[in-house]
Amino acid sequence: MRTAWAFLLLLAGAVGQTVKYQPPVCAVKQSTVTLPCTFTPVRKIIRVVWCQNHLICHGATPSVYDSDSKTNNPFDTRYKYLGDKTGNCTLQISNLQKRDEATFRFRMEADDAEGHQTGQRGVNVTVVDGSPMRITSSSEREVREGQNVTLLCTSICTFHQLQVTWFRGDHPLPESGPALMLSPLTAEDSGNYTCGLKANPGIRSVAYMLQVEAADGGTTLDYLTIVRLLLVTALTVLIVIVASIVIKRTCVCRKAEQQIDE
Ligand SMILES: *[C@@H]1O[C@H](CO)[C@@H](O)[C@H](O)[C@H]1NC(C)=O
Ligand SMILES: *[C@@H]1O[C@H](CO)[C@@H](O)[C@H](O)[C@H]1NC(C)=O
Ligand SMILES: *[C@@H]1O[C@H](CO)[C@@H](O)[C@H](O)[C@H]1NC(C)=O
Ligand SMILES: *[C@@H]1O[C@H](CO)[C@@H](O)[C@H](O)[C@H]1NC(C)=O
Image (cartoon, rainbow, N blue to C red; front, side):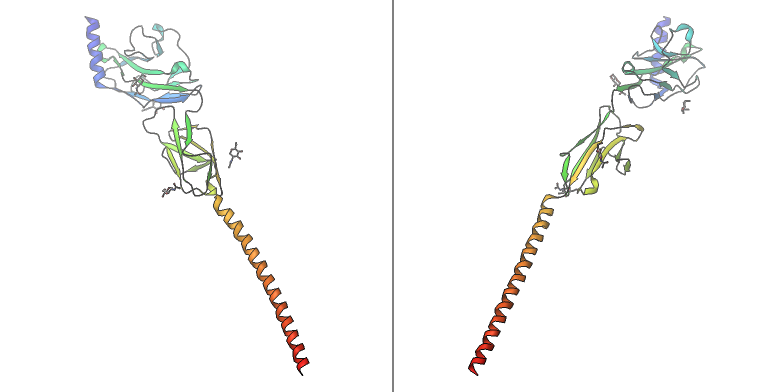
C-alpha cells in the first residue's frame, strides 16, 4: 500500500517536471563536463541523488552521487555535486570515461514522501575518443581559382542546433553555419581550415588543408600572348630592316642611273 502510494506520487511528480536539465552533452574522453540542472522543491529536501540509466533512481539503485553517504557504497570521486538542496542540482564529471556514456537522472527526497521526485527526462552524455568534429568538402583537396567549394562541418555527436565556428589557420571567420561556401575561390582562400562548436570552444576538428591553384587557362594564355607579341615584334623589325635596305638600294641605283643618263 505504501509502495503504491509512493509510486503514484512519483508519477504525479514526473508530470510536474520540476527538474530541469540542459540539452544532451557530447564530450571528449578524459575531459571534464558539467551537467547544469535546476529543480523546484515542494518540500524541504533532505537527500539528493544522481544515478545512471535508471528511470526511478530510487531505493537500491546504484548512484553516482548520494548526499546521504551512510546508505551508499563509496562512490566514484570523478562525480562531484556542485549543486545544493534548494534548487541547484548541477553535477560535474571529471576524467570522462566510456562507461559514463549514459542517461543521468537527478532525484530529490524530502522530509515527507510527497516531496520525493526524480527528473525522469534525464540528460544524455555521449563520450567520444578523438575530436567529434570533421570537415568534408564538396570537391577535391586541390581546387582552382574561380571554382566553388563548400566545406561541411559535421559531428558524430547529435546537437540540437549546430552552432559552428570556422577558422582559417588561427583566424576566425564570420560564418556560423555548418556549411562554409567559398565562391568564387581566390588564392587567399588557401589554408588550413578547422571548425568548432560555438558552445564548446575546446572542441575543434582536425585541420582540412585547402589548396587553391591558379586558374590553368589564364596563365597559359598570358604566356602564349607574350610569345606571340615577341614574334610579331621581331618580324616587324625584320620587315622594316629589309624594307629600308631595299629602299636604300633602289635610291642608290636610281642615283647611279641618273648620273649615267647625264
Ligand atoms: C549551480 O551551481 C553551479 C556551480 O556552483 C553554478 O555554476 C551555476 O551557475 C548554478 N546554477 C544556477 C542556476 O544557480
Ligand atoms: C537519450 O538516450 C536514450 C537512449 O539512447 C534515448 O532513448 C533518448 O531519446 C535520449 N534523449 C535525448 C534527450 O536525447
Ligand atoms: C558558383 O556559385 C555561384 C553562386 O554562388 C554560381 O552562380 C556559379 O555558377 C557557380 N560556379 C560554378 C563553376 O559552379
Ligand atoms: C597547413 O598545414 C600543413 C601541415 O601541417 C603545413 O605544411 C602548411 O604550411 C599549412 N598551411 C598554411 C597556409 O598554414
